[in-house]
Image (cartoon, rainbow, N blue to C red; front, side, top):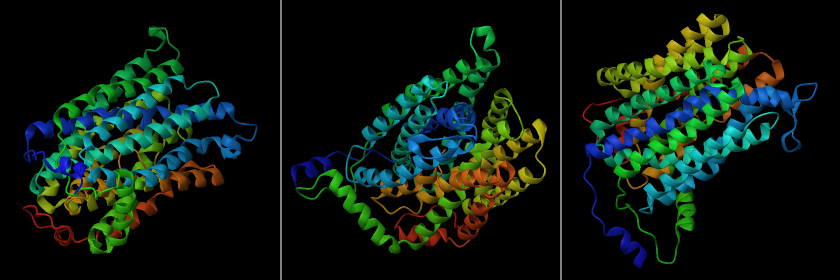
Length: 455
């Protein structure tokens, strides 16, 4: 073993279930939820669509890099592109992290790149839609990278019987953090004239504030989380990048040793792609199809944040009664029914508030419990690598859903049909999840099982 690998193995491993680290871990959900809510869910979609329409030709098309794109679909396509880039880079980063004691440092680097790119959205105005697209791609890819390292700490700071609770607490605190900043931005937007601002300036300040919030509160987990001794050491003469690429190829070829983990991951990537697409494009739907103003959209998402806290606690309780897998399956059935409601019954402001209420009750449960379920199935020593695959469709990130939505919208010019097209993600995801055996997956990954037995 070379000197570098020997240095890696020297430090002692901090104790698991350390409350100090768990509290610090919670606060990254608080920090990054500002990006998910203020930027992705509320302000950027409608605002970037308005900027793209201002730059469009008479037929409603813009031409980024010479490619003909319907202006209304531009934001959806940018989301898809950002996640395709995550697919290419995040698994390599995750593999590198599993071989190094640099997990926290890499977490910090990507968190602050994302935060700075988000602050840069302040300069999005006029017809400069391309600037907005580029900055969002940088911020969203960095966001995803930081979440890979963040999620990979979960198996290190909580034992299997505690992970449902710890994961749910992170999501719940994230709702409050994201909701608090969104409430402040709602005040700013609704009283823009009294502050001497135009609505456009208020939106740009709100976008930038999410980056500032993200950067400031990331300091809390950075002061509390600790790097562990990696389960693997570098081979002599091989650097992290080469090792990461080799490990990624090895993981892909050896995935058949963990068929239940792969099955769950496939189910998750499908159904959560649908969830994230609904969340990401809901504000654009409200503005373009229902004619709702940014103030109304912000109020609804704000309601989702705070009601979501209680919805998250309800599903945490439900998971204890019927198991996390059963609770997630119930949430997916509700998600599918919600899209039928949007297509057939959603009209006007009241209907949009009802939609927000339904989403609030199931959103946290479907995502927090999926994260804790997956943590039971991840092979030891490959946490960051496997969570990088998971992050391809985690908070605020999806690629196939926005692509299908954008294509359906461009072809039909009908937002309701575009939304209804997403129901296939919940049907397929629910069917695949029903086939996953959680206990077998845990045994395959050689994990200690949680106290309850889940089929």
